[in-house]
Length: 597
Image (cartoon, rainbow, N blue to C red; front, side, top):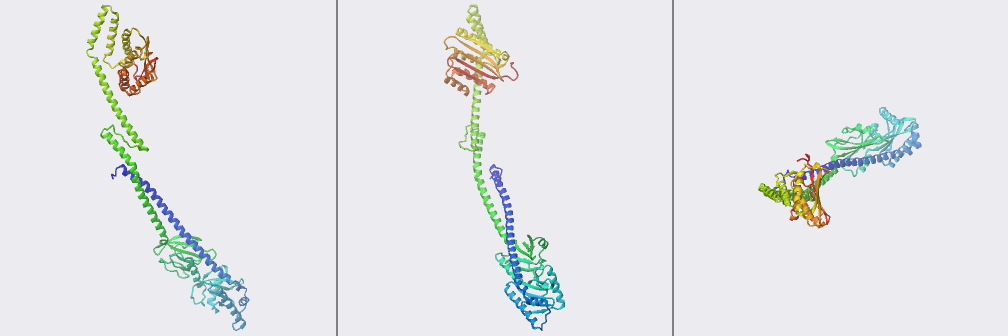
């Protein structure tokens, strides 16, 4: 395909018009869909985190409610308000009753790992495992300081903060202190919940979320519990009670209750979604590898690319079909122009009929060729007519002096013998021929009227005053240049076809006047006139310019000469009614340089 052809350019433009908007729409669709998918993943994970928060909060709240009956236990109050003597049977009974009660509460509270009761008066700690410990001075200071701190703002804390050395640390757990006596800051009931309990709830919540790591931090950012996703973990597990070293946006987490951000860990980009509990201060965090939810984006990108490829292919096919429908008629018109211009075939016509814009072009082309063909024909006919006229004019000028001398001889003889009619006729005829055979093509209106008067003097003698003639032409037109033999043939036509066959006498009038920017001459008679059918036939001959019978040869000749010299807007008009006469009207332009020859 020629790269400079209109077909190639149209196909390129068509593809650009299709591909450019398609590319822009595809790009923004991809970007918008990516944001929607990311928001969808973030919302889904955030919902799971809120569910996890509610579940853990419910566990911790339920654990606190479990020990509520213990606060009204009589033995429990005796234990707090008296000095315990282990050698006293009654004190041992109180201790056993308390430990049995705590053991029962532990069993009934499914999520409670252990329960401890600390008595600051006796520096004694009782457990739900039915064990009893006495604290040395150094550990007493630590635990009582913790108790006093928590009395002002009780919350869950990690077990390694309290230094519960009596436990074997088979499991990590969190502890919640309950102050038993507002007047005694050193007596506290401790609830212990295993980290595995929290971890189990995380696993339940994340059962359908593959590849997601969940991390629960305390209010000061230390690890409380965590689970791993099914994929490769880009960072090592966080040790219980320690702060995760890989998190660089802890400030963002501390300053906002919930949200999400991107974090690169171990060379992989993660979407980090977090939520902070208002009651416990725990921070629930989920780490979603982008490669997991990027699968949806990749699938979307592939779908968009496939749709775009199909659209481009369809656009390409449609562009070829479109170009064929557009270019084929254009190519037909181009071939027609080559035939018209190159081979000068003015008869060439496009035969195909169409109802679209190309149909208008085809019709215009056909009309143009017809008009040019008619113009060539008219120019040829005008050239031929001019040659014939020049030939006749040349023939009429053969030896004009011989004709003048002969007429003058006849005039002298007739005058000698007193034959006045012959004298008048030869005088008028000699002057008539002198004007007719004058070499110039242009004469003044005055000369034209003199020529007509000499002609009428001859015809009056011939027809013995059968008609009267009136001539009324505006004086300012007398010096206006006009074509020779402009009105004389019209006067002759009025005599022969109007007056000659009329019964009785007739009249002929010749007028000339200005009409706007034009000059109008009329020759009218009151002769036989003509029927409407004959009038229309004569008018058609004048419109076509065809010189037909001798009857209208003079009229057609005058009309053609006027149009040839003055233009198509000027010429001869005929008006006639039966038995009322005929009027011949000649319209000419007023000369731009004035009315003088």
